[in-house]
Image 1 (cartoon, one colour):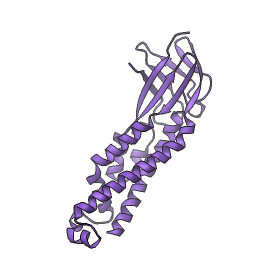
Image 2 (cartoon, helix red, strand yellow):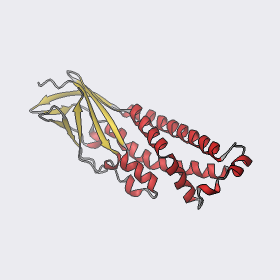
Image 3 (cartoon, one colour):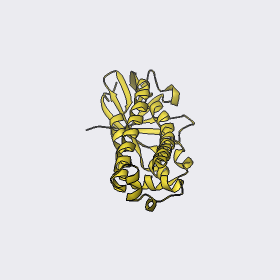
Image 4 (cartoon, one colour):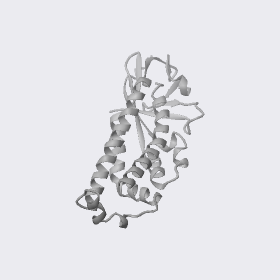
Length: 218
């Protein structure tokens, strides 16, 4: 039982490794950032549109996670200044919810990689390991996994806070020109659309997307 817990942790580390690789680019996205366009904006980006982590995944759970997870960026524009940041609270909440909803699949995948299945985790085996039942073992495993994932996410988010962008901007000819920031991904300006949204072009070759659409909040 202890061996399985160790392997489960190793699987989760691999699961998080691909996710964190995408997080690096997401934090870089947050480093971008006269007609009055002041206000709060939100952009939703699919994780699978950021890089090829989903294609690199060698198991169905990680692949499904990368294909279905979205990240949210927040942009605030006042009269002269802007800030763009990751909505870290929502991201952590969404990741925990995904892990909760797919916990059984995650466990089954971890067992499969060890050439095992649930039928081998019996009540008798669990009791020998100090648990009241196999279900009690799974319940504790779930709690440990969710806590470990939340702690890892918080650490990665904390690392990315410094990359959140702040600076000044100006509006010219239907475009938003950022005075500083965004150079890492080639985010030099944004197009103001008729519906009030702002499309920011991206020229970074590491990304699968070439723009981000920020929609003004109501």
